[in-house]
Image (cartoon, rainbow, N blue to C red; front, side, top):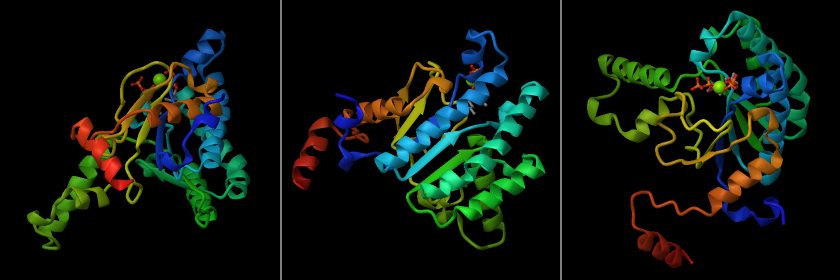
Length: 253
Ligand code: IPE
Ligand code: IPE
Ligand code: MG
């Protein structure tokens, strides 16, 4: 039986986030330039988005470019930006057909102006879609967004809009660009690396982590189903004991 057939559609994660890693190594194994891997990564993006939407996952967040990635060779950065623009232009129809809303988080001002403009056009053109929200993390740094949120709150205090006592976790959350997305229940990282690389540090406090050995260009629908299948077999305790969690489930039933 395939993983998909074994999924409990009543217990899907509402938000899945993915660190799409391994494009460069995928290409290197084939004796090709790293950019070849990035181009093939687009197929995997399509597979992930389609499979998530088909399952009924409401939010999919993809880590596409970190602020640290600006430090890569100019040739690679330019190729990635070009690919981003090309992909947005090409996929807008499919997004609308599949009722997927595009969203973006990150230091978007630092994107090349042409991409920034096209990105926001597409966000507007897909704003009415309600099947799934696809968030791209672009020029993204979680530490940066946390510092920005702190600065924002400090300013509100200095302007007497709020007091220090108004700062709660929930309030802080509203200052992050990911708001109002729910925290991801499941975070997938491909390529066999076991780190977070400055992604959604606040939001993943209780997220289930899943590490997939495949390089990103090889990621297919079945890999997403497998990750969700694995997630559904875990017990999320949130600090409680297993007995408490089991009892709650029984109480609810
Ligand atoms: C992920 O693949 C894509 C981006 C970070 C833009 P990499 O380019 O990091 O590929 P590896 O990890 O070097 O193989
Ligand atoms: C993380 O991958 C960023 C993205 C997937 C966009 P990296 O390849 O940049 O991460 P490190 O450098 O291996 O931690
Ligand atoms: Mg990498």
